[in-house]
Image (spheres, rainbow, N blue to C red):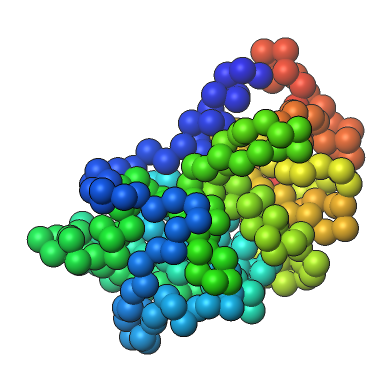
Length: 275
């Protein structure tokens, strides 16, 4: 299982870089980040300070960044789960050259606020420079007053008082959001609009559940909690797949699936066949 765990960690790590962080004072939890105005890819005016009263997820990404592309399905799920009443997702594409970002975001189903900027000779005037962004994807979560409460890697105390690192990336975005916006109360939009095979797990006392399998190179896919039951959908092509759940860091087979196989290395995995 250690090999699979290494693959999981690697798949969740931000591996794309553009510029080193250049600000003398880097933004961190508790800071009020710079306000900014921009025009969205739809041609609408946007100002960050006008989002006060909502939580804001600032997502710095690029079409050239593979980890950023892998994160888009997680953002789509979050948009379906929380809507835009309490949470505003703002994606800022930092591009190396001119690109039709609107076509890309429309095709990818990114139905939230999208902004595009070029990393050119005016870089010091860009939003990404003012935020000291040099690693992609980079996400900031702002509270209703506009203060940073989470970013990619930050430290929190667990229930025992120990300091641990938390993530605001990929499947861990939901884990962080649920602390502030609560667990999903109505999953009907997600279940009706997301395509694919439904996975579910009853773990009432779990704090975090991920789905890991051969269909995602044993990376992590977040499950979403409603009344103690966890759900997610994965769009799978016809074939045979192996998978496990990661419940608060512990790997388990699916207790509702009687089909368990050995992957050849002594690891027992649940198996599913998609026809």
